[in-house]
Length: 212
Image (cartoon, rainbow, N blue to C red; front, side):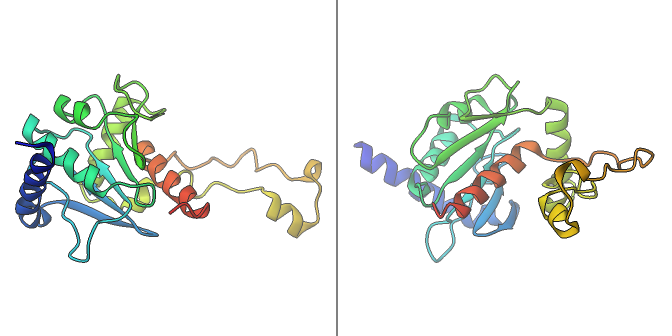
């Protein structure tokens, strides 16, 4: 079988299971054209492609995902078909990602493919994120349990902000800026999905720079 024909067959296999996968897949719209897909196990969680065409910029969460060699090859074909510099795909991995998937989608891949993982995961991502395996698991499970995805992307949402806009509004110089009250206890640090958060930040940066 020639290479183009093999790729075509893989894409046909992807299309065949996409409609069945859609019902049970965890998919979230993150705004500004970014969609989140969680892959728990292949082939049933293969991302579905919109009827209108390619999915556009997306986050493909492969943390803790299970897949055999053929399923990993199918997902790799889906990624290669859809990724570009204008439609980046952010792949999230960790040490618990199936070895077949780690091999199929390593860092330093094609243009537009950005692989992120916790820095201690012993994988080969493009971007290593500072987060403990325990916190990575807790954040992953929180979304699985129904936590709003927006709640996992915020960091200290109630923290008092003393920024340039505040100083300008109050006509104060830097050395006159008030310190937050010492006796005020800051709220507990919220649970944040650091790897997912970094992927969203990268996407927002590309949007701001008009790269996508």
